[in-house]
Length: 501
Ligand code: NAD
Image (tube, rainbow, N blue to C red):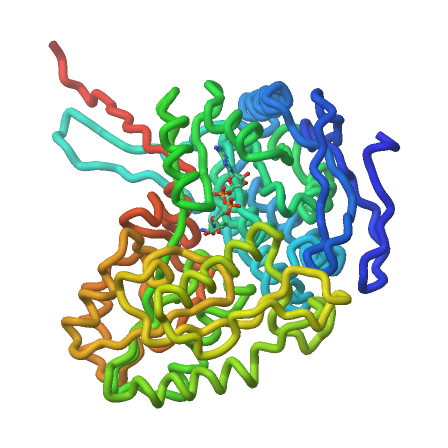
């Protein structure tokens, strides 16, 4: 065990002892293949440390541990209230350790520390507490039939759940998936993204203080090996995934091998509509939050702003002003930084390639469009917040998910045009409408093809409210009561009340 941890001193001076193994059966263990993942600090491109990466054999061990835990009376027969109590204890422990967790999140992912600490860790703790409260409120129903039959339903856990999470909100995405899964009595094998393997290992080190062995297993590893091993494992009953649409489709195919229950949260190109009766100042501020937060790496980012033609120029000027005054790019450990680096070189290059595409397609670069070199000694994956205007609906930058601080602004004439443009996409995740006309607000909200609509705000999601997409943005819902539906199955029980043959 001693060689399965490292002593780290983070850029903010915090000293952290970090386990580096695979977390299986409440222990940190070596990978059977000896393969490792090296975490890179996106602010200066330095290596932070290397951690174990799971092979298919290791995934199999984790699944066996999860299956044994699922069948063990200490978990299977634990009262629902007691399960909730364990989750409250877990949330308290996470809260106690939130500075270390947020430090690792910022170091590994590049998000501003104040955001990691106050928003991400706040959300992790709140989500776990929220689902702790649900643990003993998951109920079936009785169903009236005939006097000879009494029928009722049981809401039971699905079994061993595989969870594959992305790098943009490593701990928050883990909490969104673990919270309802554990509240409902499942056991889990979770795979973090290879770009951000660190914070979850510290998080894992808290688990043995709360849960019996095997209830939660965490295996770092690459998508094509570890992720694939989870999606294809014959003894995993469900797979939940957040990430790109292309990988989501791949997982759906792979998971068909044993007809796994699936939940997919995938990509988006979410529209934000600004009508000419909107409070423009507020629209510009929310539109900025909606795309520039988290370095633009948000699946629900409102990355297509559609503005009614009469107010187009005024809105563009206001929006550029907000970008200039708010989007301070800098060291993510500085308190005044709004935007840190992109998570990896690959993402940085991807965003830059879309900037080139925008220019060559003839869109107008209103601001940004270049790397930002004033931090990290000229190193690091920083990009100036980028705004393209006069964007046409056949352009690549208008249609494809970019996942960076990159927004396109186009114009529309009428409400009907706005809806046609908003819905002209294969995606359907988030959307936003800015108007002071209450009838229009609800009329448009009803007709937008999206899992979520914000009226006069953007991206202020909430753990009590269902989250998910339609079309190619996903299947199923996370968060809120709906999120429990993804981790329970309904059993119908028929009781013969005297029907004799
Ligand atoms: P990805 O979808 O490839 O990775 C997400 C997760 O899936 C990771 O844990 C990865 O290891 C795993 N994975 C990859 N291939 C797999 C496979 N064949 N089987 C099982 N698991 C697999 O995303 P990415 O390559 O990191 O990012 C590419 C693009 O995806 C981004 O530019 C962005 O557009 C999008 N993205 C979306 C979200 C979101 O929240 N919707 C999050 C991250 C990335």
